[in-house]
Amino acid sequence: MTTPTAPPRRPLLRTPPRSGTARGKNRRATALALLAWGVGVVFCLPALWMVLTSLRAESDAATSPPDIGAPLTLDGYRAFFDGGDGATPWPPLINSATASLVATLCVLVLALPAAYALSVRPVRRWRDVMFFFLSTKMLPVVAGLLPVYLFAKNAGMLDNIWLLVILYTSMNLPIAVWMLQSFLADVPVSIIEAARVDGAGLPTVLTRVVAPIAAPGIAATALICFIFSWNELLFARVLTSVTAQTAPVYLTGFVTSQGLFLAQLCAASVVVSLPVLAAGFAAQDRLVQGLSLGAVK
Image 1 (tube, rainbow, N blue to C red):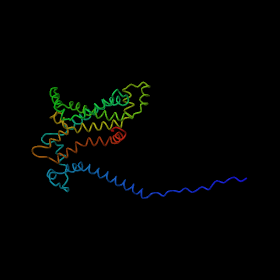
Image 2: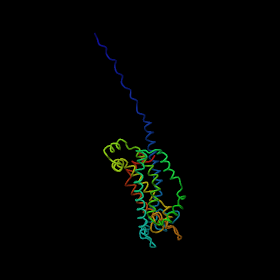
Image 3: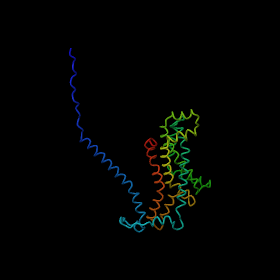
Image 4: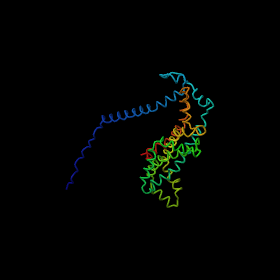
């Protein structure tokens, strides 16, 4: 008895690669990359022009149209650090660093438990609480300037660096709570419950469990709050004079009745921008990770 033989297998037909489609995708990717580089260069041009202007003499910096081939010099930086007319830049820089760092630290200490309560352990009507935090940013800053000035005057806190710390903390706290709440919502609740079963209290859970997991979001929040505090001008201009003068207020002193010292102003702007650039460069990995994993939505 003969066994039936299986039918011969047909060779698999392989579709040839679509070279035209692949080339089209490569062209689109190249075009998008060139567009991204072009947008990046356009955004960097003002900063590069500021650096180039800071390396010119005052006469060359004031020419219109500007002379690109003008000789380079460090006179603007020497005039900035020498402190002409008895004014030195170090006290304003120290004041800005003190107000920004202390305010950022206070914001993190207050925002982390608030974000924990609104995300991991949500309270009743927590959406209304979040909307209240957001509504505090809808008021124009200039609308609250006069009440704050009158309060500071009656309290004897004008030209006081700690008044700026309090203001910067209150101004940055809502955005910090929003950012951290969005990021802490991704923290696994099982890890927190396991820590509480082991006997960990709330401070231990926040510092040893939540903070290491949320480190990218905390870094992104801290950097943004630091930038906002460092660049703030309106309150610092009105509420300070000499003792608590910050770096942005010091920059406005280069615009005088004698004219605009453009080269010195650009040199001062470069120096004042360096701490923010250094902080962003140091925390760039944490910042990108925090922004991409849900710190901002």
